[in-house]
Length: 171
Image (cartoon, rainbow, N blue to C red; front, side, top):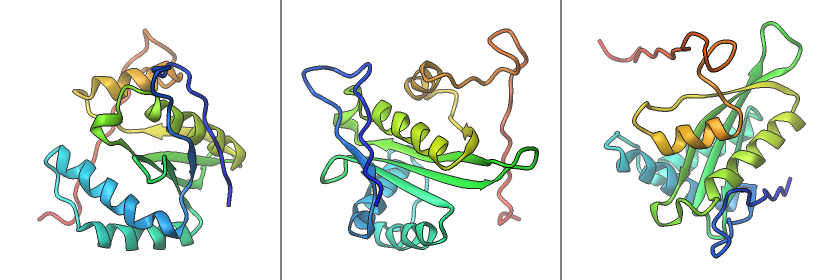
């Protein structure tokens, strides 16, 4: 199992960021709870934590998903999904989820998860990383932008990039 520890750049020095590591089967219950709490915090529907834990286990076994956790017990989670790129021989990495429990926000845990995610994506030969974030989530957008992510083609003055989604199950 890969054990990665991220730095504490930008973290509150009085409360160091929790160490980040690749989640193992013993973490899936906590991961399920974190993902459930994430959706519920924002009023989105979520399966029960046990169902999410089982799903995470299946996704990790497929080798296209890596889950990182911060802390022991976990107080933050990042879920990375990998797929072959179309225009290069590398991979595309998608940050599917990033969540830190509310009382640990602002202490560098999200940044530590992101820095570790970026290193892991490079180690797995990903050429790009995609992130979808809601416009009102200014704290997340600030974090991502501070790490070099942009939603502008060609830089700050370029046209905006958009992400569209359609629920195919809805009729």
